[in-house]
Amino acid sequence: ADAPDRVITALVSQSMYRDVRDDYAVYFFKEEAEAPVLALCREKDYVLDQRIDLMMPETEKTWTPEDGAERFLSESGAYVRVVLRLEDGREVREYAEWILDFLQSVGELKCDLLVQARADKAYIYHREVHVLNGFDAGEYTLEDIAEDVETFMSMGSPQ
Image 1 (cartoon, rainbow, N blue to C red):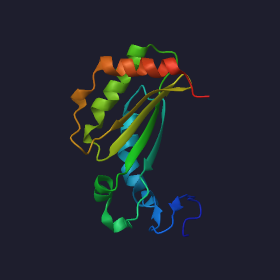
Image 2 (image 1 turned 30 degrees about the horizontal axis):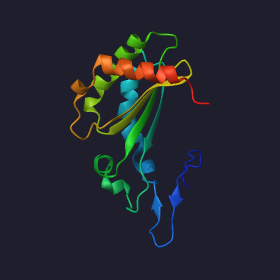
Image 3 (image 1 turned 135 degrees about the vertical axis):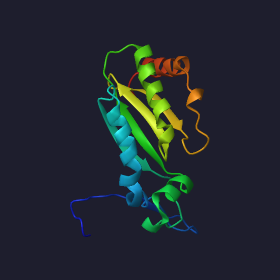
Image 4 (image 1 turned 180 degrees about the vertical axis):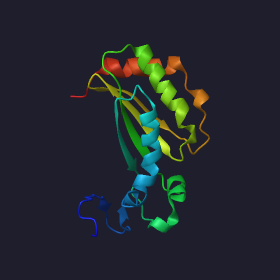
């Protein structure tokens, strides 16, 4: 109410015999959770642009700013969705190298991620990255990522 220039939306749902569920708490922690991810994206020359959104499942729990971002991110199921915009017209291997570099850089973040990459007007990569739960960048190989990119590229844009 005291910042009319900041428009937000929230989903609130209720079904018979259940408590109200919502995802409003993302707005308490949005800036703090998204800022490190944005900073990481800006460090990477191959990221032309990015879209970053803090997301969470609907919940009955009432989160408040006093809970703190660290607790919220570790207990709520929240994650940061990051869509990396990469240069069009590159080879699969080059996209895979960029994505691998990005994945190897996320270990210091304090949130889980949904990493998506776009090029040539299509999504070329999609992976949940559980940074807060025993993350090991070594589980990602260039060959596996290249295979994923090739698969996504062969599917083309959804109609």
